[in-house]
Image 1 (cartoon, rainbow, N blue to C red):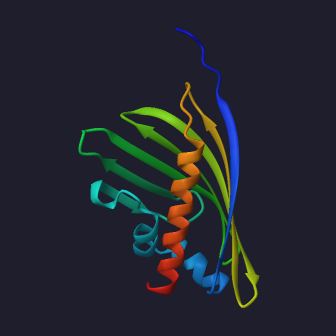
Image 2 (image 1 turned 135 degrees about the vertical axis):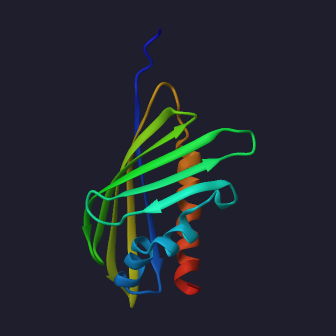
Length: 152
């Protein structure tokens, strides 16, 4: 079997919200709120769980109409209320691991609201690469977070 080297990339997305850092952080910590804004495949999600604490897990399982199964597993490593979240996650489709990421989310008081900085470092495995799609999906989720903060 031919060896395909891993590919590494990263991206940073910044958002400003008219809400306190504590409120934005809480939208990440509350399981119901988190599912509402982060689940881009809600109509196909069959399992979602969030245990928001250091070494806690977030599980997201999607079964698509064509039968493919996507599984996302996250592990939280560092959580500082209102300031920072650090987690790692992998994405598998049909039990094939596509990527592994390390993410840092930071919250800063800014002009009466919050500036949130989302930084993701990715390693793509076995020839998979979807950076543009991953960035777009993350941006759409963070847009939904902004709506969640306005209309919880």
